[in-house]
Length: 206
Length: 206
DNA sequence: CCGGTGGATGAACGATCATTCACTAGCGCG
DNA sequence: CGCGCTAGTGAATGATCGTTCATCCACCGG
Image (tube, rainbow over all chains, first blue to last red):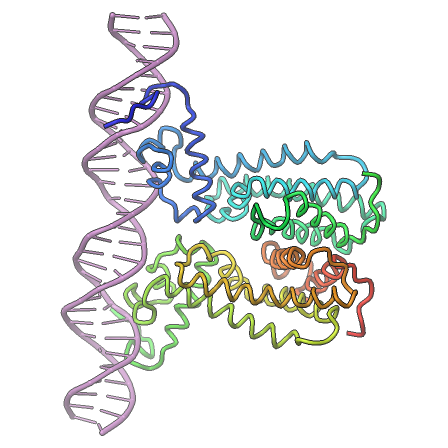
């Protein structure tokens, strides 16, 4: 009845948990949280449906874990890539590059984090909204710094920040690997668009 | 058992069909197609679940009707608002204004048309993709015209077109009526952002 | 005034959903 | 060497899903 895997059961390790997360991630991203069943996730992992509950308390807990884990990793990666000080133009360029490349590298995580907010129950929802706000705040800070220094032509910081993020995130809706442009080329195009939209004519040294 | 409504049944008219569409529209937009049941839609309309099938062959047919109807109306409205000739800068302004205001007026239709593509079966999917492509093509045409005339600083027409549309569509994720800005004010901010992102310094008469 | 028809009903269909649970197999530790 | 824990099983739970259907009602044209 069982295959000759090296470990049929027991406690070798818990890479099953990660396998469940990976399977759920791609399925949720592809068809949406409500349209995916626990049976499908289990099948993708290679276990039966009941086995998932050894690692996650519920389908909802699995979703929260995915979204929260992603957002925290995103914030950590952002702060590692974009220093908190320096010339706002340079920081904006780094923010855009980071955002585009991260979104192209992990499109599924990003898509879920932005789209499945409505599938969250109140408890998880408020935590996720706070994380999202913190991320957007990073960009608002850059725009505000540039506005004060007079290097950005900003008419409205909050609106422009949301506009920029939407523009950048939208890259995931059309970009496909192996197409006309490489990821880096696409990122540079978006950097140029962002700069232009803020009236930046020449960037400092870089 | 039945309320004293003016028409309990019979053939007074068929505004029930429109009521079903309206109910399904807001429910699908709010929680997503797979998460909404026919029972909920019927309850919102004030009929029993079986009654929906007098007007729509299936849940899928209802979704297709909503999405296709919206996209066709969107294209008609666009072509009525944005003439096919004239100065590309002016046309771009009109496109942006139209897009933002239409999206703020009918956020549910727009959201469904862009998000529920994955819920479509192959037949409806190809038709919707074609309609979407036609809409995006309008903007690409404007950018290409401006590029040829030398009034737009375009590095890559397709990428910039997708970036613009994503930026504009994103307005639905944050704008709420009664906030700091009116719809028209928001639209003008987006027009300015779009112009700036294309390096337009001064627009013609308007 | 009567027969046909469009529209609504409400019960029922089988399928599938998330979740629970008693059970068991294997491993590490004492 | 055997005890206990981790992890997976497989069947079962009740709920809910989309859809079907026989039935009924109220109106309209002749």
